[in-house]
Length: 315
Ligand code: AMP
Ligand code: MN
Ligand code: MN
Image (tube, rainbow, N blue to C red; front, side):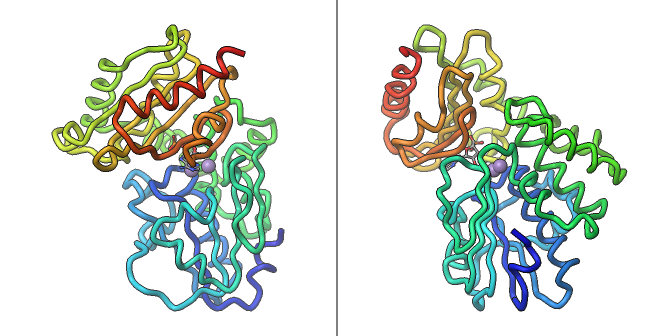
């Protein structure tokens, strides 16, 4: 895919990623935003994201991110990044109404929602997929930094099994641009606020193991979220911490999004395919990291998930 050729003649171009945007989502949107503005100076380029975390403010273009609230003129081209077209939240209507829909992603569960699709499940991050599309002549330190942030978030700083030799070769090219990479890893990936650390501690302390210790679940209800004054953005990293526990093949983290509704996050070892556990509940993601939203009580959700986990562990 040639990004600039796909946008040839477009006057208005929109870019969005999934709801509850993570590092790869914000990094992808802002990398493409900066790239298109540079490559197509005549076009109006806009990025719409719901509530990106303030920790990403260091990425160029962050202050230009718009909330998908008001009615918009239609877009000639609209990009859905790091997800399928049905997880864009309020920007879904911009995407669906666009002259040309382009979907670039790396989720195995995405069958392609655009007029033009590039879904590469073997690649660790959407940023990495984008990097391979970028004309290297247009790259600069700001674009490189945005790509790098997405890569470190989705690969757990090049630790997870989705890290390819090519991932590291790309990272090597990126850090040549000379941005402060230790600083952004610390500030966007490892650093937590005091409250985030407290809520993580509480979830870990109250977590419960089941299926002979192969599974663990941690959760937060609305009341606790209100007590600590925390929201979904503050839970990043909790599920990974649960997954780090010895003997655990499937870690589940869930928080209440509404009455009897939970957002579920899964992280698994090679014994459990996470997409097969959340798939029956309309979720998706990757083999080792996936998510979904479920209705019911806490116990209903855990019971329902546990069936699909046990099935795989039994094999
Ligand atoms: P999370 O646990 O929310 O960090 O998500 C883990 C991975 O699964 C990420 O790549 C998400 O984009 C993806 N994911 C989470 N929820 C869903 C969903 N409902 N549908 C499709 N993919 C999801
Ligand atoms: Mn993502
Ligand atoms: Mn991603």
